Structures are given as C-alpha cells and as structure tokens.
Image (tube, rainbow over all chains, first blue to last red; front, side):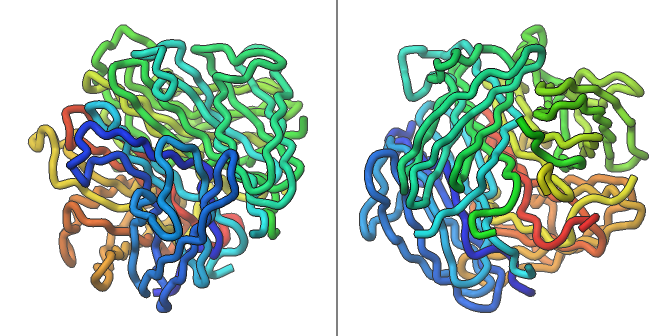
Length: 130
Length: 130
Length: 130
Length: 130
C-alpha cells in the first residue's frame, strides 16, 4: 500500500467542554480527537502546535505513529509540555515527516445526550502522490 | 512556524436559530461560528461578507487577528454594519490579507439537547506554500 | 466581489427520513439541504442529478440563483421531474454555468431531539480564480 | 453525464459503537457508512483497507458499483475477509479503478437520541477531469 496524505494539516476549531453528563464513562466523556492515519511504510513523527485567542502557542506536542497504523489522539490526553485548557477556544496545526491524513471530531456530552461533529482537517501542499 | 491556509474562504450554510432551550447559558445558546486560525507572523486583516436569498449582501464586517492566534467568531455577535438576522438562510465569504484557515460550526439548542455540526470551509486558490 | 467556487460538485451522502417527531414544524422536519452560494455577478443556472442504488438517475432538476445570492435548496421540496423518495439512499451531482459553492446538511428529527450533520461538497476542477 | 471524483480516498476516523438504544431498529442502529458515488459510465471496482492502532491492516474488502449508481456501504456489514471490530478505533483507505466520490457518516445511538456526523473523505491525486 502506497502512502496517502499530506505533511501539514490545520484544524481551526478546538474546544474541550469541562463538563460531561457522566465523567466516569471514558467512551462518552466530552472530548476532541485528531484521528491520524499513517498508511505508509515508515513511522510518522508527528508534532502538534496549539493556538489560542490571547496567549502564545503551546507545544510542540510529539507523537510517533508506526507504519500502517492509525492513532486517534484525544486532545484531552495531552500533557507534555502542558495540558489543553478546558472551556477554551483553540486551534491546531499538525505536521509530520511523512504523508498522513487528519480528521477532527468532537463528542460533546455536556447534556444528557451526546452530540457529534467531524471534519476532515485542512490539508496544505501537494499530496503523497503529488 | 510558517503560515498555513488560504486568502479566500466560503461557507454556503448559514442559519442562526432564534430559539435556545436556555437563552441565559452563553456557552449553549444556539450559535454559528467561523473558527479562524492565523498561524503566521503577521496580523490577519479579515473581512466577512454575508449573502442572503432575497436581498443584497451585508458587510463588509472587519476583524483583526494577531499573529499566532485563533479567533472563533460568533456570527451572533456581529453588529457592524448590521446584526445577522435570526431564522434566516445566509452564506458567507471570508477574505484575509494573509493565509488563514476557516472552519464552520453550528451549535443548535432549539430543543432540550444540543446538536452540533462542523465543516472546513471551502478554500479558493493556492495554499500558503502554494 | 469576485466570484468564488467551482462548476461541478458532488454529495455522496443522501437520505431523507420519512419520519419527524413533529411533522408540522417546518423548521424541524427531517430534511436534507444543498446550500448553494452564488457570490458572482451573473445568475447561476444550476442543475442537479440524483443517483440511486438500483435504478437510473433522476433529473435534471433545475434552479436559477441570482447574482450575489444564496439558496438553501431542500431536497424534500424537489418535485420536477419527480419527488425524492424517502428512506432511500441517494447521492447528487450539482453543476452550474458559473462558479458556485455547495455545502450539504441534514437535520434529522426522527426521534425527540434533532441531530445535525454538514460537509462541504466535493468540488471538481479548477476554482473560480483557477 | 461525465464521471466525477478521484481514485483514492481516505477516512481517518472510524469507530462503530457496539451499543444501540434499540438494536432491532436497523435504520437507527449505531453504524458507520462510506457513501460511494460512481457517476461514470463504467462499473467501479472498489477495494477498502482498514487500519488499526496496534495490528496489521485488514482487507482488502471488495465491492463493485455499477455505472450511474451510488452505494452506501455500512462498515458494520463487512464480513469478508473479516468483520470490523466494535468499540475499536480504525481508519480506511478506499481505492477504485474509475473516479468515485466518498463521504463518511456515523449514526450513533448509544444513548436514547441519535447523534450524526459526516465529512467528505480526503481525496488524493487529480480529479476525474484533472
């Protein structure tokens, strides 16, 4: 399988609600995720940078994704170099040394029912075959 | 960090429900947002133009976003040159003098639970590295 | 304002639920919409073709959108040359003689609460400035 | 009608909840779908490959879609060469020998109400007219 994707992605939306109807239900706790696919034959060394309204960016956060693997990174779980503040608008740029595909989702369980949303991230530059 | 994005974006969907289950809950009031990321090193001077079904466009609305910042602009909050009518179909074009990334979201709380939707906006022309 | 968009768009998802919690509430009846923006200075002559799983395509459906206008076309309202069947998978191709932008949404009110989803449609070919 | 689309698509998000409020309601059971449009005049021979966090990819899964037809493929229904595990993160790459358009949706009915999300998949390479 040839690789697929781009080296640079951006997600302009970002917001992790601090509240969840059932905070003990890990699957249904309010969260935001960057779903990352590395379909190629080399490990993807990925860095994330987070942008805010009124402070300098946070990061870089680093994650390695093996060849032919996907990793659904929860922004809630980021801690190094610092956790992602809750109830705060942010945006993110995701960069990798090999082509990857990035899709953004939020599961919002502030109220009794869940709400979902997803969007492919914005991809910059030429594709893996480009 | 190099800039990322495009100079011209469009969002064809637009509709702000006038109703909210709890109009006093600012976080959960029905709203539409254009999440704008300016990852570059220069201030982004952004203009929005709104299109309607049966009248001439409104705007331009203007907002400045500092370098390395994101701004999640609620259409609900626009007032100059005129507020965005509720319960009315609209669309928007967003333009900037530097590359930006634009993502559209709606939180709809007309009923007891919230519904969410999001999409990266349509980007025109060559990318920031293009 | 210069035009923005493409001449050919496709939406692979399509499904209008026949049920709505309150069928008399026009705003909240289950529906699918193609939000179309014509930001240019000429009328857009738009044609839609619908594709199905096991029959030949329906259409063309025709709609004209004036310059500097948006039209949020509900698939529910299409009748000529034939209505869109409910509870049936379909897809659509939207074509125009000038650049337009197309975004797809569904509001689903089969149960007591609404669910929403949206995606920019797939755009083919070079952009309005391309 | 000319064809429209691309030969290679990727969906980085993938997750089929094992639970549904009413598992006997086929329309509202929790599911993920790849909506595929083949607007061209030749049959599309489509292959899907699924990627996981900590095992080698599954597939290829194969499906043929006739000319001028759409097929909304539920990942839940895949069985050959193996079913898709529930409650497990995955991603997918979809490839065809003719241009197709691919859109991803999830209907999530783990709780009493449904949640929906959709995104056009990531398209690689030149378009059908490219």
